Image (tube, rainbow over all chains, first blue to last red):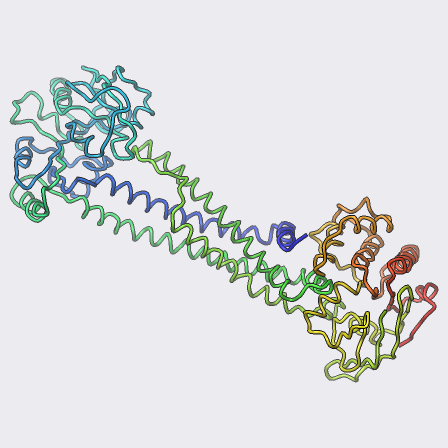
Length: 411
Length: 208
């Protein structure tokens, strides 16, 4: 028998009184922990994916859409640009590297991206098996794609036109898996990479039979059947040689060409400041829930004093000091807050696991649900303080219970 | 050994109550009777150090309760005074055995399960030690209270109306056990009651 056992047993014997408060507390903690995890991991993922990309060039439209589609592969393309025009950038003396991307097709919901070997190199991706593509119709799978589709080196498949599952198939010529990338925790994990010429070739064939395509699909098909000068790509990822590029090129491109230049860092900041408003609101609500949980702890403990005052006076008559009674009640508050916090963190992380399953199937994005963020540790201190604060007043009242009057029933 | 001298208590705005001096040695019994409102429970709480007298003093094992600080009084009471109340006061979330051990824990003494068990055995309640207090009858609960009062080998056992809520059979059984066990543990026994049945057990008698 000790104080810890005593308070545990006392809490356990009256689960109804404290159950609701516990539920509230764990709900608040779960929401906050989920938000912390989401913002932290989204930011990290985004930062990782834009490293090495100073500017993205694509068709005119929303700059955010261009960034989301070209860098993160989670939005529809803005349209196509001429390879010839984009190719001029490559020769610009301010540009260190230019990676062309042609996308708009998919296989089982995973995007097929026509590019150059410099694209996987940008993310320091290494091959887990096989080799990079050497000729048209050869592809390299991202690790997640390989895991989800079960395709292996040497297998072949038909791509689908468009970015959604079940879209019309390009069934003239199958793609063959040449290699599989090792996991890089970047956008590559959810992509199927191939050479630009494969994309052009698919649409050259497709052109003859299916001239009309849906609007949101980028129009690589218009490249089909024409000379090299008319070939089109969807976007180009640019890395500058120095800071001068950032000053000169985006403005130049946006003003003097029919292409659009977007800076990932700027767009991502904009996105997060937009998301931030919603996140802040949710966090405020969650903090309010925690404070309400604190109040309800207070009420539950305070009300329980009425029936427990005999027990507490009895403990005093057995030799317990007022301080011991105070500690007993405070410990109950602490135990409640720890339980609520742990339950909340578990719920929050399970929530992230569910969300991760959803995002990985629809966007090819995954979250690590086992990691604890620094903010969550700070939250623990906050929750503990809430529990102690809400237990303090009942504890003081309990400490001051008049022993003699209570035992003789006169009060 | 417990001894009082010149005890007086005064409730706010009321006449002071003067109590006669008395003493009670180990294995001795003393009955204190009086009509309702004569201050029986007040006297018992004064003896237990639960209230402070307006004047006078109480000596238990030659220690003056008046001279102690409140926290010292709490600890002294836990170790040297066994209390049996009229109402069945227990910690409802604990088992029978835990309720008895609680007295040792609260008094800051090591918890001795085998001593708790042997007390329960002499009260005929060992088989109920893992049950919750609520599952016991009133007579059984009062016997548990005796075990609890004696667990720390107190100098004096103070019983406040220990039999008033019991029937004749349970009343004599509880009184017999209380008397016999207090003597067995070398404790002085003071019973405060208006219950006439108790007089047959304890001839030594002070009327307030």
